Image (tube, rainbow, N blue to C red; front, top):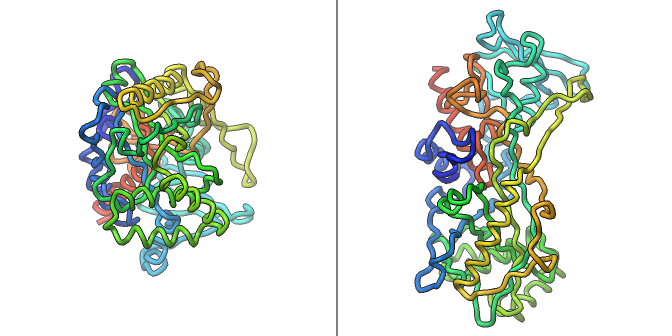
Length: 437
């Protein structure tokens, strides 16, 4: 997340975090080492390329990095450590169903958990407890633990479940490179200096542009519109080839290219490589097309929320019910983002924008879907009246209950949440180590 994400927007009520970017930076660095991903400074290396006519654009380059499945599979990255640990025990097929507090309601006394079939119930007793079940399930467990407090635990001010946010995304337009123009150079962008980690290349609206129009944060990805199936493996091939073109001295990239080729279906690989050769590596116009895939931040809205359903799960606990609605201001931000793309193209002469419908859409015509980035239902803040956890991710008023995960996000920015989730988890672990000494 950028410093602006954490600061929030003066025109967006209830936005902003109670911690600063510098508070997270060392934990981002540690998270990147654990998962062998890009370091925090890699995200800040985008610079507008010199000698372009793009100075009037209000877009900034952004990199969206991929990690391989092995890097994101926690069973592979930390599973061996857990398996060998003398201090960690993992219970499978065992679901936490109820949080029980002490008589004075100031601490957790124990958790109730059930086996997969619900045939066996057990108590989990500890000094400190951490709920880490995701943006929807953290709220559901707290709301459903209502035997002692009518509205659920940590919910004195009816905040648990509220301010649910996601990243709506979709696509309504394409960009075609003009003759002789090259991607990404002629769009006024230069690749990050590390040149090693594969990525989607994107652009986002500058903070000043958003402030001037009271828009939410948003970005789009320049995704190659290929005449082959755009699987994740094909996208990785394209990204690796872009990096090789700009960083030909990185030996690691050639090894990654060979690995990518082996992972792609052979017939797809042949078609794709022929496509690249015939289109001059797929980076030069006029036949080169890019699909504009946009993703936007959602402003905090207390009416977007997780509540309990009348229906129950197989263990007899109430299911979640989610209210999720995109506002007019957020839809206007999507259209503004495309306006800025047009400004970029006008300034660089690099290409032309074409609408799928042959004309700019109205806000009620914009398609969008959830990114499955469930955030915000147990938000972080200093004031218990409008937040669920404090700056240290401890539930207000419950001394030994903590929450990890994206449910503590007060605002979601436009970036994927995984990096921040892991950074916050490491930060909470440091705090717990001190408490448990």
